[in-house]
Image (cartoon, rainbow, N blue to C red; front, side, top):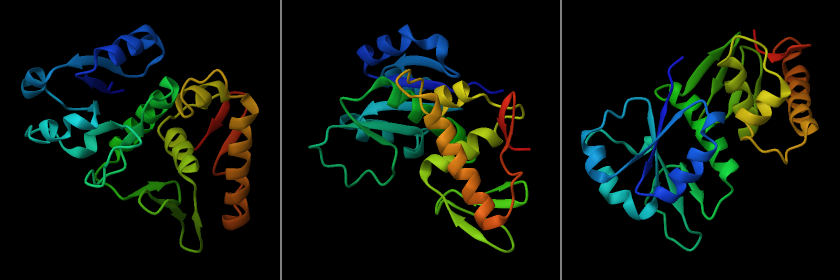
Length: 208
């Protein structure tokens, strides 16, 4: 499995915080300056940056905006960002890790608007899953769950989903994950009459 690089741009305090809990991550973290970025191989990388660095970053030839998560103060004007990869700060570090995990999965499908999952098509832009007969609007969290399960061939336990999709939050109760999946499975059954889309066994949940 390819390991992504999460590049912390011009923010050593954030890098130090992530460094302390890095053993939990499915990605590598690096701290780079503008000079470093000009020379770096940014393949399979996501950049974390304050919005004040936006103009500098987008001047670099091998960076596009889809690879950047911007930090924005609520009173800052960000109408010209033109994407949805941003987080308000100050922020909970677990919210950040959650955002990173999901963006890594989505980056895998970056050039696709529709993904084939079993007998269904999942449109990432509209968040609609459909087959030849029916279609269903999903929440962003439901899309995240489906993408994560589809990205793994083995059953995923609740605590793994809790950590990887919800973002390592010890405050999240287990039944929150189970409730989300229960509701998602029920929606799939109600619309598509399919009770085998997300399977459940003693080892966890899977899409197979």
